[in-house]
Length: 194
Image (cartoon, rainbow, N blue to C red; front, top):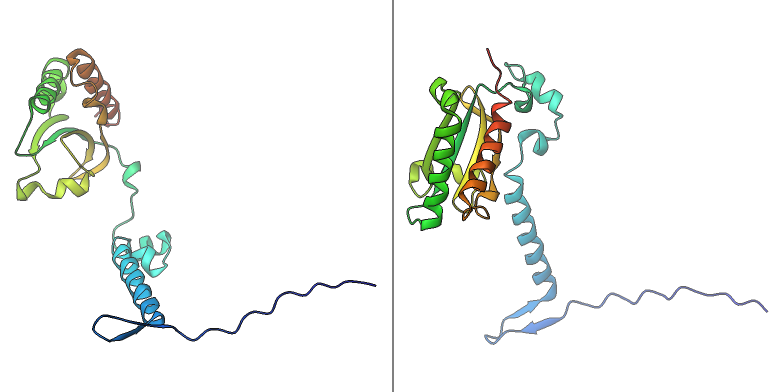
């Protein structure tokens, strides 16, 4: 005698269940499911707004480059012509924040005098609470006071780094100065010397 196994039959789809709200209006689970799908679709649409034209249209990078008048240049392949060291902060500042900025400025003045004199290295203190500077928050993914080192080419940033170790080193000015120097030298190495 042989035994055969059968897959269980799928149960018949149950009709949507209705629930009553305190006001007496019936809301079906089907309607709730559609509302959830619409909310999901809306969230995806908002997320899609942050994608590039080639991602949303399905075009390849080569096709997008071929249709533009200027040749496409990968920013990572462009030579830097300068370095900017930013210190970003808000209106309200603590003693530690001001000490970090002071250590960075001292490091630049003492160890990079030739680079600052030639204009290859620039220090910029930026208050991100001022409306004119709000764009930096998104551009450099800022969440607090930060030192950012950026390689520039022309008017554009081609590479940058948020130097997060300034906060753990804040109480050791010598270590903070050495860290700032190391980060700045890494970016100065990207500058094409003429």
